[in-house]
View: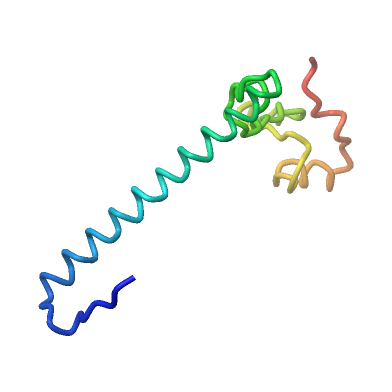
Length: 108
């Protein structure tokens, strides 16, 4: 690789060079990603699979499941709690008043 003398460039030329360098890096990374994907597809095919068979239709990212609410505030039915994480204030208040969590269970 040759050395560049950047000291002779003015600000506009340096910014242009910076923009062109960033674009070249993005293109390089995209090419490498495509090459890796093609190699992975070829390896999967040689084993008798498609890449989608191996990583699933979601692209390999596991879906994040949402926990349904388990408890509901009878005073305000829009307030629910899954039973995980911090207890909402209405649950804390009810427990302090000697109520049971079972009193707030959502019938299901």
